[in-house]
Length: 321
Image (cartoon, rainbow, N blue to C red; front, side, top):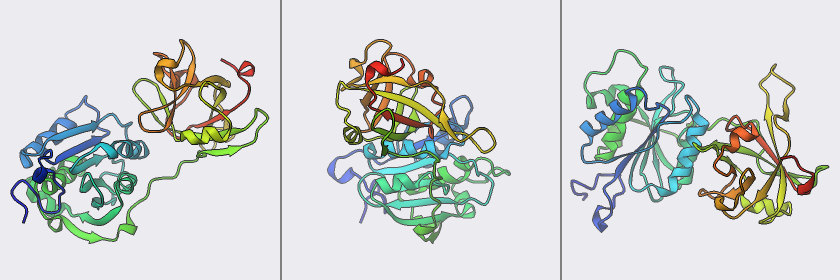
């Protein structure tokens, strides 16, 4: 039987001297307003023995796909506990709130809106074991009277549920079980993913932008082995062109938004020369476009996730710069 510090249904490291289970918190709230502070204060009140670890609160507002991608990048490094993730453009609508039980190591539960935000992380953590539909009428007694409006489910619904699970409360108290197959899936993006093709500039791979970080580094969906398929090895040069799908009625579809730019495949950030665009394997095992102490995103006119990037093996002396 679990002891007081080993909650039911929550994987812990207490028995082997591991760390206390935590609440891992991600949102698009930003830090200018009180939203993050209020949620953290509530978590402290409801689960005072559980540390709260902020993954990020700078997800672009309402960008569910960007939030899902960040959760996937974080997943391998999280220990026991509960993930609280809120990127919720559908707050106040009939969209559902869920607690997803996952298999494998790491967090036992993912709590947040059912809008595609949590499913990729659940898959990366070993798959979905069970899903409970959060019932606001059951969660509200955990916090006392809730606000009259339904505009802050991060505070009024998701945080109480996460705290309840993190402290060993039974998931059945939060709502009813639903079929995992009914979970909302992430929206498909219009861009291509790691497609190799022949082109006038030589063999090319078409991939997509998954993230632009604080430094302007452009993470690609591209895996390093695909570059080998087009004959690009470390030290070799390529031509990079950013393309974008215009919204309906706002252009002619897929087209270049910047001139072709020379990039060199390098083993590390420090190997990129001043003013040179580099292709480097980043800490998440994906390729990224980087500049030495400058923003590759600004240099290439990358708007963000969803932009398409074409990388060809045209000889370096024929490329732009």
